[in-house]
Length: 313
Image (cartoon, rainbow, N blue to C red):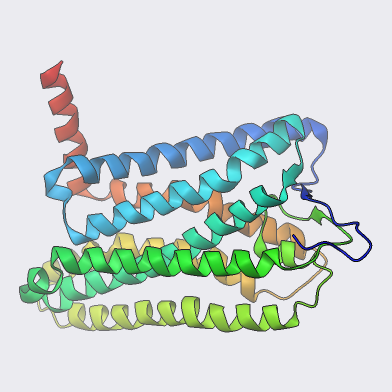
C-alpha cells in the first residue's frame, strides 16, 4: 500500500460485515457454517469421484471437477474470515490478507466464467456433432481449454492486485462488506480511480459479457439441434444431458447480473452483501446437488466407490 502524504495510511482494513444484533450473530454463524460445510462436502465429493472413477474421466466431468475446485477455493478464501467476525468479532484484516481475498475472488469468478463457457462448448459438440465428439474433444484439447481458463483468470487476478496495491488509502478503512470485495476496497481509496473504473468496465465486457454471449450462442445451436430430433424420447434425452449445466449457468450469472446491473440505492450495500452471499456460499452448495440429484452416472460412481470400500474392509 502506498504511503499517504500525511503518513496516516494504515496496513489493515476493518470489515464491517452484517449489522445484525449480537443475539442474532450466533444464528448467523451456524447458518453460514452449515451451508459452508455442505458446499465443501458436496464439491470435494465431486472432485474425489471424478478422480477415482474411470467412467467419469470424460470432458464434461473434467470441467465439472474444475468447477468444484473453483467453488471450494472461492468459499474458503472468504467464509472462514466471516465466521471469525460473527463468532469472535474479529473484524480486522491485514492489507496482504485483503489482497489475497481479492486475488482468489477474481481468480475463481473469472475461472468459473471461462469454465462454464468451456462446458457449454462441450455440450454443443456432444449434441450438435455427436459423431465427431471424441475426435473434437480429445484429452489434450479439453486440458488446454482448462489450462487457458486458469491462466487467464490468474493473470487478471495478478493485474487487479498490482493495480490495487499502488492506490492510497488515507482516510476510511472500513469495508462495508463481509469480505474484501474489489469494488468496496476501491471505494475507500483516496487516489483517483476514474481510469481504474473504466478499465474494469471494459474488462467486464471482454470477459463476462463475451463469455456469456458465447454460452448463449452455444445453447441456441443446441436447442436448434434438439428441436430437429424427431422422437420425443430423443429430444428429452438430449435436453437432459445439458440441463444440469444450464441450471448452473443460471445460478452463476443470476446473482452476478443483479449485483453489477442493479441501480444504486440506500440499501445497495445490504443488497450487495446478500447477492455476494448467494454467489459465495449458496451457489457452491447447490452446484454439486444439481449435478448429482438427477445424474445416474454420479450415483453409479458413488455406489461403485462404496462397494469398493466395503470389499476392501
